[in-house]
Image 1: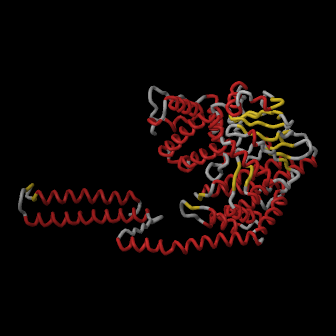
Image 2: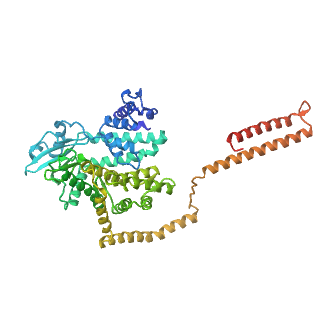
Length: 550
C-alpha cells in the first residue's frame, strides 16, 4: 500500500478505520498495512464475538459513518458479486443520522442565494423533515404560496466523501493483493463503481434532471404522484421540489382493499419504469414511497436510479419472459448472451441450477412466487460461475425484488406474474411497431456499414504486420496443467533412470580394467560409481512408491 500519497488527516482516518474493523473481528486482514508511527491493532470486542461475520461487518460500517454506510448499501445491490448472506445484512443499513444544526446548513443557503435567502419564502421551517448522511430536507412556503421541499447537502460532505473514497480504493487494492479470497469479491471493481455512483448521488443538478424525466414518464399514471422540480431554486447543493403530503407505506393506515390496490400499483409502476421507460427508482423500499391523503403513491429520494439502454431493456425482457415461461433452456441462452465468461462454464450443471430456480420461485403457489427472487438467484448463479454482467442488471434484480417485497408487505396474496405478464407482452409487442423496426434496422445497417467501411483498413493493417513480421498470435491452453506436470515428472524420472544405468555400466567397465586407485583390490572410481548409482536408484524407487503409482 502506497502510504506516501496520503496526508496526515488521511493517515489518521486510515488508523481509525483499521481500529474499528479490528474491534469487529477483521483485524487479521490488516496486520501488514505499513502504517507509520506506533500503532497497535486492537483485538475483537468480547460483546460482539457471538455475532456472525455478516452482522459484524454491518455494525462496523454503521460505526464508520456516511461513506461506509453508502458503501454497504451499494454492495447490497450487487448479488452478482456479493454473497446472499452479506446482502441480507447490508440491506439493513439505515441512512438516517442526527440532523446538522440549522446554523451550519444556513451557510449553504447563503452561498447559493445570498445573505437574504429567507426573503425567498413566506415561511421556512427550521426543523428538518428528514435527515440522512448526505443531505437533509426542509419544508418551506414560497412567495407564490407553493409548499416546497428543500434537499440540502450537509456541510463538509463532499470533502469527507472524497477522502474516504481514496482510502477505500487503497484498502481494496491492498486486500486483493494480500488475501486471495478477496479477488472473488472484485473489491477494486466494486470501489470504482461505488466511486462513480456516489459522485453522481452528490450532484443535485443531475437528480433534478432525472426527477423531471421521471415525472414526464408518469404523466399518464393517475395513481402515481411525482413531485415537480422548482428549477429557479435548484443548484449543485440544493434540490427544490413540490412538497408531497403523505406517510411512508410502512406507517400509513389503509384498508385491505387500499393495500391491495397500492401493492399492484407499486409493482406495476416499477415494471413500467424498468421495461418501458428505462429509467427506474433503484431503491423502492416502503420508506421511500408515500401514501397520499387522496389514495395515491409518491416516490422519495431519486439519488439512486438506474438507466437501461434500448438493447439492455430488450435483453432484460427476454430474460424475464424466459423466467416467466419456466423454460430453463431459454433462461440459459439469455444468461449466456448477456454475460462474459472468466472461465469455462459447465452448461449441464448450470442448466440444472436454473431448473431449480424456476421450480422454487415460479412453479409454486402465488404466496411463494417471486420474479424478483428468481432474478436475484440468477444473478447469484452468474457470480458462482464467474460470469460478468453489466452491474445495471444486478441493480434491476435487486430493485425488482425490493418492489415485490414492498407489495407483499401490503398484500401477501399479490400475484406478481399477473402484473408482469401484461407489461411484458405489451413491451415485447412494441418491438414490432414500425418505428421500432425502422430504428432497429437503422442501427443494424449503420453497424454493418461501419464494419464494411473499416474492413479494407483493418485488412490492410493485418497484411502490413504480416509482411513486416509484426503479427503475433497468442495461444493459451486451458486445463492442460495436469498433463504438463505429469509429462514433466515422467521425463525427469526417465532422465534419472538413464543416468543410473550409465553409472552402473561405466562403473562395471572401470572395475574390469582394474586400474587407478584401489580399495581392497577394487578400483575406487568403479566403487564410487556403484555407490552413487545405488543411492540414486533407492531414492527413485522410494519416490515412485510414495507417489502411489508403482
